[in-house]
Length: 387
Image 1 (cartoon, rainbow, N blue to C red):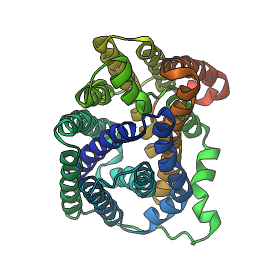
Image 2 (image 1 turned 180 degrees about the vertical axis):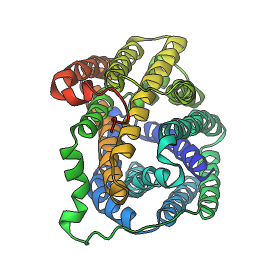
Image 3 (image 1 turned 60 degrees about the vertical axis):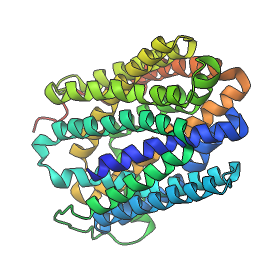
Image 4 (image 1 turned 45 degrees about the vertical axis):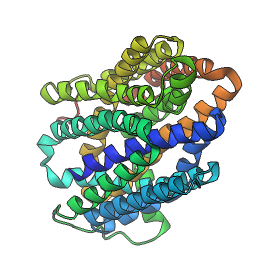
């Protein structure tokens, strides 16, 4: 419940910040900078955060993350009420959210294996993804509706959801076994060394990085909603929710029918489909087709997420989970936040359509290139290697 409430609030907050920024500046470049301001502090903090996650109680870290985000939402309520929300304040808030993200992501990823036995982990990851995607579906849609009423309706609701997540997370219990690794640079970098040596995990991380970095369209959705599809914040909420609807349907399918053979090939196919779906979205001027394309992209992306996280959890030792999850967070942060900057930068040069079309085709190229660059991943048959 805590994770669902936190993700729901975070998605609402992202929709409101993006639309608020576009209303303030009308600039694709500034929309991209929002992602960059989240990425840079997250990049700096994530590896040290992974070491801290392995040493301290993960539930306590997650609770603090929820509380800090609630404080950010309250700051935005105050800023909106006093008409003080500026371009610079949005950048400042984005940087704070980036720091919080550097702790939150490795914490929630490292916590999952402590709550379920190993043989149930693939289904647990899929079920967790189902719940997450349900929140990702509801968050943008609810955020768009509330924004249409008043922007502070979104920010105040986010604060309440995040406070609820903070209180609920304090009730979670698990057997905490802190890592005994020394507090030094070698220990902090141990997760990166581990990923580099394990080419299947490295390949899965890198594939997701380049796919979302090049093919992601999230940062440009306010432009598509307002200038191309001619809708308002409600429409933006629907567009933001559409990938999560597809991901939710795919997560439910994977819960019942988990991928058990040819997992590497399925991963590459999913990335290629993700790129093609975003290409279709890029050239679409019809709301229905745009929503359908985003749903397909979300479904394909969820296959990638489930395969990547399952491989990571199964092949990582218990005392390394926080640090390896931190490395994964860097890849995810680079693909999402840096991808938003890339989208904004290319859109400022080629326009939003050119940016999305290029990114979709480049993502297909990444999937094809991975066949040669990461042959161990492409040939991986089963999640769990036979002993």
